[in-house]
Image 1 (cartoon, rainbow, N blue to C red):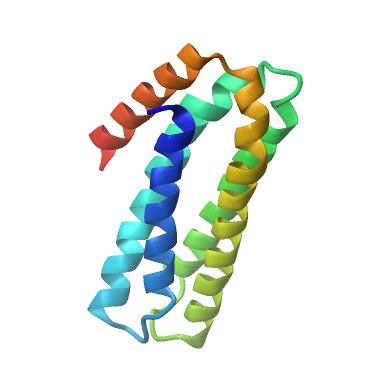
Image 2 (cartoon, rainbow, N blue to C red; image 1 turned 180 degrees about the vertical axis):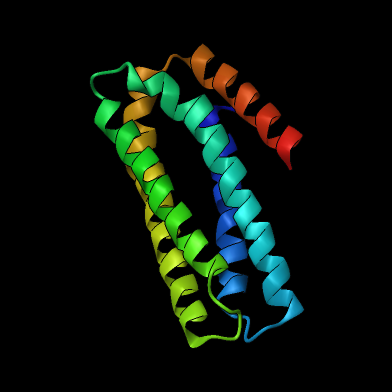
Length: 144
């Protein structure tokens, strides 16, 4: 498995959690459980991705701005998660913010999969792609 396949697997987990989350209602155990799972998944994914995907790309002139943009989007996602933490589950504002989060995360995932992956595929060697995937996967499994 290369780094792109490893990241894409986690993107699919995030998409599924977001789809389920925005279909929940009120102050329910299901909403609480899904939100906690999503919050954890987003955090460890961002940490692993920044260490084992973006960091190696920062040194590349072609990828430096893209890597910084991706990291900046992680921070925007963190801010939406914090806003959800500060809002009551049964508030109408909670669902609106959850939908904003879903939109932001999906935009970020699309950027990575359809722009970043192609460009970084030209920068990283095949060995780097495999080594980064191993380090990324090890980090993810030790933090889940």
